[in-house]
Image (cartoon, rainbow, N blue to C red; front, side, top):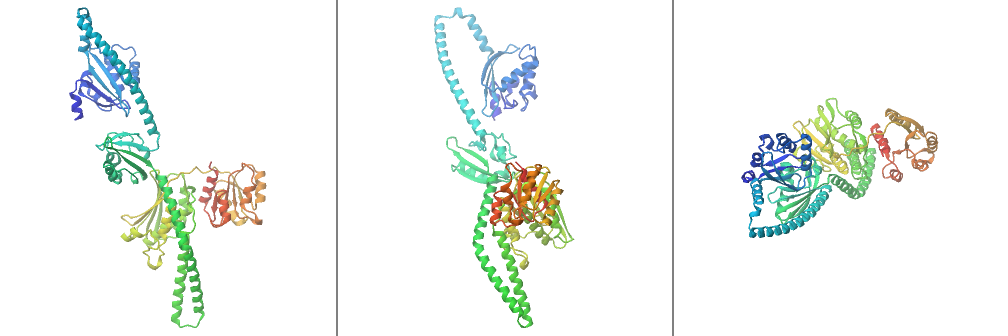
Length: 625
């Protein structure tokens, strides 16, 4: 309908976008300039059109064709309003009036003024024959023209100020780390600061003229459809939703535009904020659970201890033979209750999420070794690592415990034969995703709904119901997500952790190893040498300080917290000279020990026992700037 209207007007019209490519033109544009069909096809460049006209002689004789083309393209690229009149090579005179568009590009109207110019020439030729009355009219017209010119000058100044104001406003909106837009009553975008693709990766940035559903797709638009309709009805809202195609968490604000009947939209990416918020919420839940269970667990532990003691006395008494079986069953149940209390303590006890740079291939190799030792011969295990070799910031202990728990659950589901697959992939630069699939019977509908809840189990008396609950707890503590589902061949559990890339591992160097146990020192020395480091050793803080002074080429220090002779790794840190190389600590102390807390505030701490991958990650973190 719009094109039909444009084709009815007598002026030629063309619109080029910000890339100097034809967006639309009417039929009169092609007729006036006698252009071939390919030059009036949307997408053709302005430069091609000018080249065609210059070489055909549209602008008269030209000495340097390329220079003439470049000059006209440069003028067009300036996007300034302009008006000019020119006589074509065929004698026709046209006026050219161009105006820039708010989103870039410009619209130009070409008017045939040949007859008007001929009449003006005739009027000038016969000016001597004009009557006094006509001269008077001419003087009045000149005065009116002068007044009009003054008005035009004032309007041009107002336009200049308005343009400058619009430019400042546009620059401000484009610099904001958010997508700002306006949607008109017809549900189509009328304005955008072109940052939608940065806020939600995968979506276009040039969206003016499109509907939100066209831009976001059906899956992405579904969560916000009702909110948008409420905004058009006059209800403003601020809400969060997950854009599933990009896995981003988005905070959107819809504000009704009472003047034009549209809606203002502001969208920001709060993925990292949501991940951090989830981790903090889980930490708080753990604290509350610990407060509720610590006292109860203490009392139950005492009761179980009494029960075990009494059963031991009963076993020593001269009782009928059938009593022995009952006593054994009671002792077994009490011990199982003790193990259950210990697992509850692990879930609710103090546990810090401590991400460190981890080489994912090395981490998965260690995990494979541990997993294979727990599987029967008939169960195959495969790891499919689709991530690059970049190091990631992960809590290796938490993740290893979670994945081993899932592998053991998958083993129980498979029985004596089957296949378990662990896959790792980077999901849209937002999540690091680990998926464990098996060829067992899959999850029941009840398990899909409740399996992540504490004490839910499908193993009867053999299960505690805390395995998946612990996986959920550890994952949420990291700000991640856990999803249960079924495949065509079995069950599937997916863990998503916030994707945080880490600095590359430090280059091998000379490491000062401070450990008072010779056997343990030898084991750690082998790990360091396997990574390419050279190693010098000390058994005390005093010996270590002497080596630091004598060997300036030492690039890193790794010391136990508890050393012989009453010294500690903290004493060593206190005595090191200013500007010393990076220092890290290791310990078997629990996290709630005061010495552990003091050490963690001073330097990176690695808990024993640790793997070679964890040691490599610790030294890499200590060397990172």
